[in-house]
Image: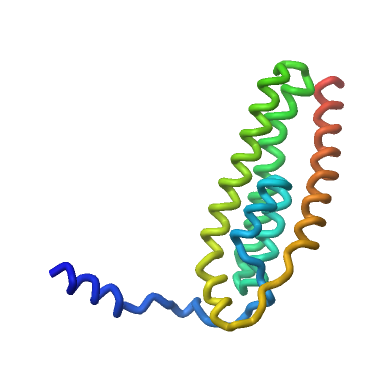
Amino acid sequence: MAEEATHGDLLRPVLTESDDALGFDRPWSPFSIVWVAAFGGLLAAGALYAINFRRLGMARWALPTLAVTIVLTLVLHGLVFGPAAAGQVDRETGRWLRFGLRAFAIGFAVAFAAAQDRRFRLFTTTRRPPGALLKPALIAVAASIVTLFGYGLLIAALVRG
């Protein structure tokens, strides 16, 4: 009886109408972007996932991804850096808060990687090479650092203001 269920599952189609092999523009491996989240944070990874949605032919998800990324970045960094700028947290607590931000960014990245993985696996069946991620990742990380530094200065000015 268990064999019948297994064979039935094997013969059930898994591709849908949205699983065409069209609309790809050299996407990046979604799980490679998780490394960007680990080293560059939420903003860098979220921006790359938004671009990758377009590269995967899933353009309708690009803008919402970018919007969620920006809102989460502003809120979470405000919650962490606001009390730190006001001197309300000690050094050790600040370290744990920053660690929490990094862990959240990695979890966020894994969730988006899972959302993009099926489409990326379909792209790999076309036997075309994926896009090179190194240069866009370095640019995204640098832009994230500059943006968050400016945001941190703004928070510090408002808190101490």
